[in-house]
Image 1 (cartoon, one colour):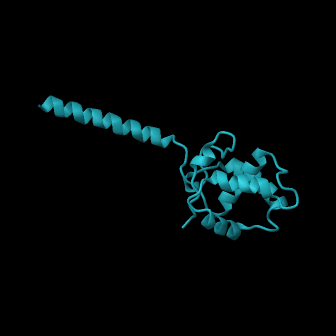
Image 2 (tube, one colour):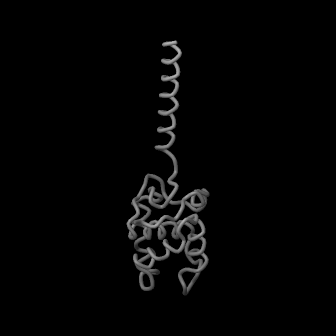
Image 3 (tube, one colour):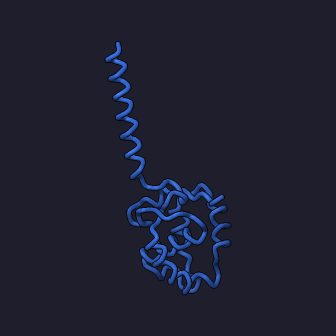
Length: 133
């Protein structure tokens, strides 16, 4: 009986440790989970300053995130891609839009992570918009 308990306890420890390791490398599930990199946000700053800052600031995006709460980041990202900049919608590359979105996340107080924000890999659909508290 003691051996059986020990075996079950050992198995549970292995399962829990494996789950913790898998979780540590998992993609973020919300914009508060590190959905962009510092380098990506730095690249987006110049583009944002040149093309976005005259109309939009951090407070504007905080309101936007409230409006889009619970929706996948992909939906907002595609809206931005199709409508911005207002004088030339869709004029940036996907990478430039990703960098701008990373910078927007940074200026609104969301933390950076280890992996860059990416439109092409499909992960934006898994990242929920959850406004900072």
